[in-house]
Image (cartoon, rainbow over all chains, first blue to last red; front, side, top):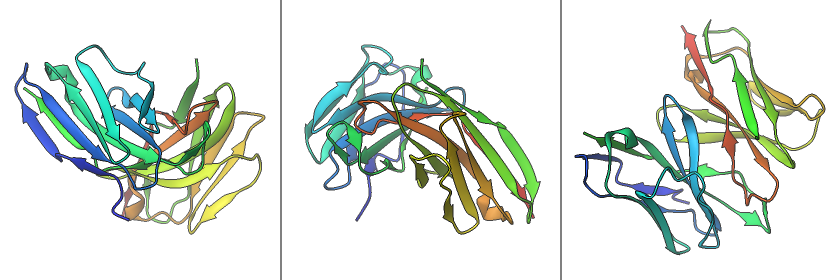
Length: 117
Length: 112
């Protein structure tokens, strides 16, 4: 199994530009999570999906952030417009959930390191 | 509000030492507690604990959960430089589809 695949690995952009992060979850997993990690705040959950449906987006910082999951094998996290304070490592993770409980632990992708100048 | 607190925040030891990392939590509708190791990239799964008093063991690492006192510990015996990493504790609670809430992590540094 290839694991959770994220792209790009690194992204450097200027303030005000649109940024799109991509994620391919592990085949067969039905829950997908977007986390952000910074030194100050640690790992924060932004949004998660179950069976391609957004369940909880209360962690999304503001309207500049949006996420989609058009099918079971692909998700995007978009920031528009980007700001320097968005600089962080963004992780995508997936797991298998039965009903509302987990069957497997979360498996993380290698993350996208975003730098907004 | 649900939360996870880890201690210590950082720890420096020498090879061969034994370390104990702590994780306390407050959560409604607790389901499971998980430990992850994070080196330079993604957190990697170590243990998932759901029952009190049952030790999980993998090589030199072991972990146990106390659901009455609401804490877990992660032990590493005979530490090696390769154990240097951030150790993250997280819980899964209620109707969450496997969502994890993480503690701030313990940074472990093992010197030769």
